[in-house]
Length: 425
Ligand code: XIL
Image 1 (spheres, rainbow, N blue to C red):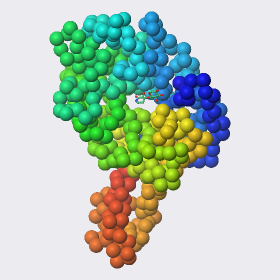
Image 2 (image 1 turned 45 degrees about the vertical axis):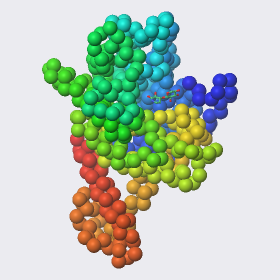
Image 3 (image 1 turned 90 degrees about the horizontal axis):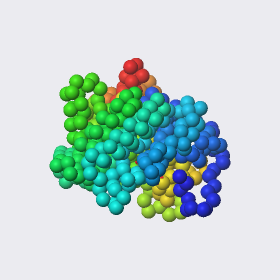
Image 4 (image 1 turned 180 degrees about the vertical axis):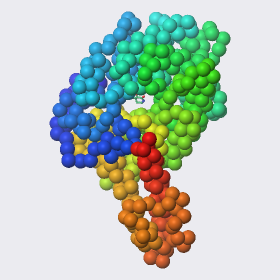
């Protein structure tokens, strides 16, 4: 789907810089790095950039229910199939997005011709018909699926009650209609159907704002209960194997909140994917100011330090698009490449987060007291080999900066340990 106004010609960049680091190489030991793509990305400079930077893809729109179904209830697999054939030639694996969602879905899935909500039995038939046919059709072609997208409300007041925290969608209401129950079981039903239709695919629950703790608590409660029930029935594999944190962030997003949710999800025994990453610069004018570029780049760097710390549990980090010019939020300049496909400061930050943030371990504050350690050897994870009295104080380096360096050095040490463990495994 082109982002420009209907009828307007769209010019996309025809050249891309090739002498730059590759994201997929930088994070090869950590996780897959991907981007959302559309038909326009499958040739020329855009395809070259994708090939050089990414090792997994998600279709931005072409596998959503409204793209795969026509008004008569039939299937329209043509575009998605041709896109799969194209990326298959490049050996790029595909994540499927998405089977069940309240947006970009034909109304007839859960409403009648007069616009009334369907009765449960009919909605159940439609859910099964969609998932069996779509997941069945793409079996062997996707590595994983977002089975249910955005089923939980924002800021649920009582998040431990996940049923009460579900968003009021047509699926929920149709499953409740005449059923004498809440309809919340549509989520579990969707996962069971997807498992049957494509047992090889990893099944994800995907949502946004999961750095908000109330929403994260509700999602965790839902995933845990559904998985516990599945295991109690004698299955050895989880039903919901992954949680996708969409990660549509903005410059005030707090990496600590992202980390808190990652911890919460990892504790459930599921894997996590950062599934739709972008960082909006709210209030941006025609272009980003140098200060805005820097603020965005710093947040990207901090986020990637967090992702690396949890790399053992993160399967994939996918950006929601290739460049600012084609982004769904292009006015907020959210991605790593500008509209001419040139790497932004944020790209530099992501390819070397430690370096970008100036966390060189040989900064005077730390290295002066660690002269025996070879270059690039981090301080112990606990930071205990740092002097109690920060040397920075006597050299005029502010104490808070020394403390920050020590803390971040400890983080990097933890990252390196995880990466080494991962590599060994
Ligand atoms: C967006 C696409 O990027 C747009 O092109 C489309 O017009 C609307 O959907 N959460 C999701 C994605 O799960 O599917 C959405 O993608 C962005 C929010």
